[in-house]
Length: 581
Image (tube, rainbow, N blue to C red):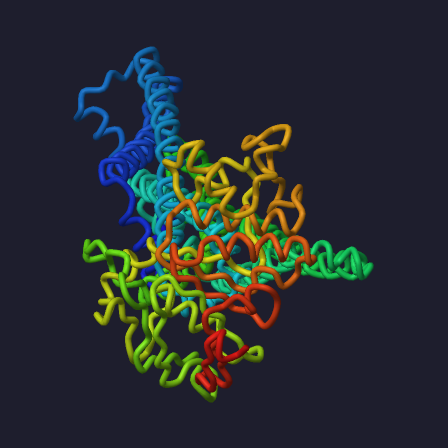
């Protein structure tokens, strides 16, 4: 008994299109090699089964039969003696083992190519997307896609290669069965096709479970990421048990998903084995009682059946595994295509010189999806080069959005960013951002040394450059640490105090010698001493660069040349320090 399965229809469906796209990233020679060794390994197995006919004839000379197979063996001049036949048989088995080894190795390489290419593409799309679009993405889902889902895509490509190998081997088995007994081969084909069709529901359920798995992994990444970001708050509120309970809930759902999937696979294998045994028994009975298949052909057919049943199981399992993992490919590619569709304009190669007179916004409007009013509306604002301007106003007034437009991080929907009276072209935004330094409210440091953190802004900075930047940022304390610039700052800089982190971040910003320095509430959570240190550092920078401070109070706002007040996305007041006094 045997069966030959045609390429699964679902492989031609829209669900397979993401995998087709991903396979295009694979090296063509490697893909061709995989196909070639898969076909050769399958042929070696089919030929090995056919060799059983002359082997049985050599062992039992009195047994008649063999028909077309015996004629084929005689036609190619293969020796009919036992010794040569056994030698050919062993050579075939050895060749198949080597081919299988090559196939396994090449399939693993293809899996890694798919994962590497997709992760690089996804990461590049993430880094190259417009800031506005990134702010609308769910961070946990994006993180899960880049980590868990892309690894599942690699698993899907592995299962697809294994499925193809099993199908090709089944094809070779069917060809061997046709040579032995066309009636039994066609009967096995019909039975195998019915078995695969019966498993359609299980494969659809596997796809649904795969989609649910992606959602649960996104929840898991979100919970862990949020917990780490707010670890101090979680501990201070004694919310650890609640966070642990939330994690337990997600893990319970993940476990239910995994166990349900395993149960589905196990049920399918059990039904397959029982059905295959019944089908094989029926075909053998027909072969003996109705079709008069000779013994010398029957025995190879039984051996072939013993090989085909596990192959059918492998086809079903690989197909089901692929169905469960393929939603990850669809989700990741959807994310990548969404981000690539909102990519920032590529740099046109223009070098943007530091402005000499003014940095200005002319008629700027910014809309965010889902909001009933613009984040910025008809903003006209001019900053003299070298000035210190404070942006004030209630939460949601548009201060951060205005700063993002000034820094080239956000493109306005209408209006323009002007440098010395000239509108910045879309292809110049990236070059302008190289002239801008942004210090956000929550200082971000990496788990590395002070030196590595500083050089993030200027990789070629010398020791003298770093020391100068630290002094300019009132962060001389870093030079006096026992480890100096080699001191590790810990995860997100937790080895340093809040004020120390803020001053290190300011020093890092200054290493790039920016034309525009944007400070987002730089001292909102600092004690008076650290606030005064930051204010003193900024005061020393006055005139050297244009400075924009987002803030409401404190020494920095008091020292500003001008305060611009925003409400509901509009400038409602603008006063110089002298006028305010």
